Length: 88
Ligand SMILES: [Zn+2]
Image 1: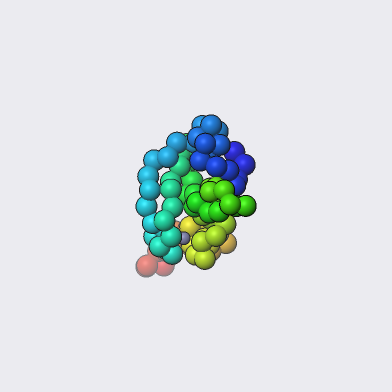
Image 2: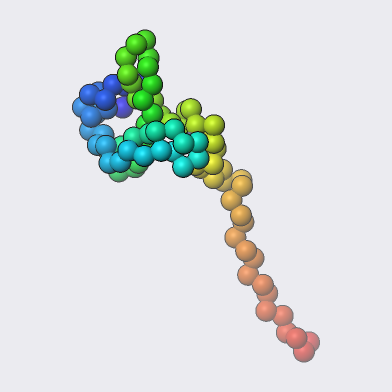
């Protein structure tokens, strides 16, 4: 599926709308589609050359970076404390 695409194109690509809601982060109305890979894709309808088309909300959301946690920001696994011998 190549975006932007019209709703017909999105559905012809096998994506299925599962929910219409607002982005939790910026409040823009978005449609959640289930992709062929079984992932949820938040799509936003915009006018492209006068035609309503869907684009990925990841591309427009001012808070898109909060949707994904970059690997380097993930907390490292807590180190297992070495059980020292208290009476050594
Ligand atoms: Zn958003």
